[in-house]
Amino acid sequence: MRERGALIERKGEAIVANLTYSIACRETARLRALLNWPQDSIQPMTERRAKGPENILVATLRYEHVTEACVAFGRLGASAETVAEECAAEVTTYISGAHPINARLGDQLLLPMALGARAISSHASRRRICGRI
Image (cartoon, rainbow, N blue to C red):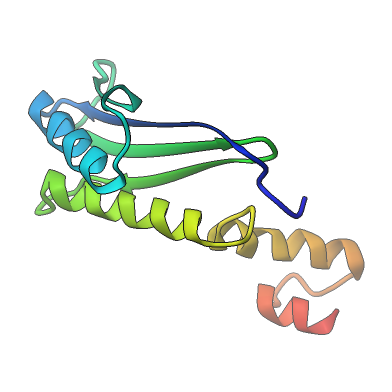
């Protein structure tokens, strides 16, 4: 795969568990403003089955050939707006790039590609493995 293809859908979900719903609402509002996405494309949600407090913001970009999920996690001391800004930065970086996959996935693909090409020591780093090919 060399290209993403046409953008089919973009959506976001701010999910909170055992935290106030307003956190998810603030995240969605800030993410919408930063990305200039339509009102109905990003939704706040609550998860009731979680055992502890949790917060995740996911922006999903579905293209013809690939789907990318950009994720930011809430954490102690980070405002809802900060979490949204982190997620928006990841979305913007991905959209502005020319590659169909993000850097983290690309890094994860290096090892299987190298293993398929040549038998190597299991103690070698991914980059060293690729250097051998």
